Image (cartoon, rainbow, N blue to C red; front, side, top):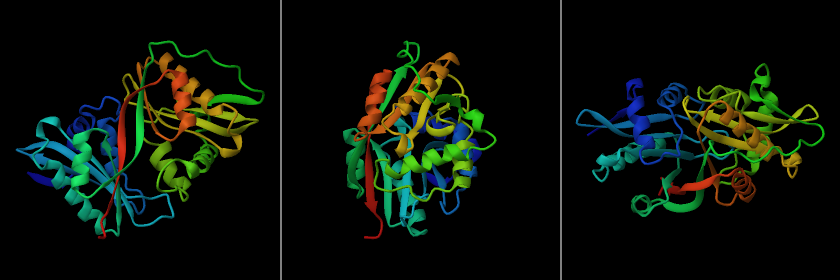
Amino acid sequence: MTIRDFRPEDAEAVAAAHRAGREHLVQTPEMFTWREARQPKGAHYRTLVAELDGRVVGAVRCGVVVGTTTTGVGHANGSVLPGYRRRGVFTALLAAAERHLAGHGVAELHGWADDEPASLAFAEARGFTVGRTAHFAARDLAVPLPSDPPLPAGVELRPASDFAADPRPVFAVEADAALDEPGEIVLDATEYDEWLAGEWNRPDHDHELTVVAVVDGRPAAFSFATTDGADRYWSAFTACRREFRGRGLSKLAKLESLCRARAAGLRFAYTSNDATNAPMLAINAWLGYERCASERKLIKRLDV
């Protein structure tokens, strides 16, 4: 077995390992190539692959967490093809990722694992503490969506493409909403240029399906959509500025985004939410999503 850095020709194999047994993950091979080629400032991002008998059988993606004033935190997530598990592949990948991150000052490593006994036991045996839960949910877009509620006075629903010339007002919604997203790290230092390059301009972002709720001319909420370019839709982030909450704007934006996805011929919609995010879980239930999988947060100290 060889652990080495990702090459563009590995993208199909890495995507296959990532999605094996996880139909709720909407990630294209092109995204793995794009993410590896794009290096956020200070992230020290790296994709490591495991090659066994000449075949790429797994990978881990790791880096330093950026966009926050919290320092010394890293992330690592990966997967191995089912037929090659229990052969030490991910143990070797994880060890290589930990060495890389420790070399860049990471003291605390964060990751996620499927919420099933074998994955959690693997993590605990390697020093991780199992924490909070996030739920994935799926929706068949062939099934009719709820009827559109009337728009409140002064509210418009507009595609993100309307803001192509100047996306900064959309960024302002995300920067505000991210401050109280559930999680251990507060994303309180996201920079506009980094968001523009890493989110707005990512190759799978669909600017026509992403919907912005505008109140009296000012973006107040949005539902950010990515796709696999075929028939699968992912709700990447639905956000509302805190001063506009309680008006149903997130629900309106996400419903309109799903309606657009259905009209565009997409068939399956997926989303994910922290188990404590009751407002979004309620919106998703109203939209007809059904839980299809869960994952657990993992944290490990690298400086002990």
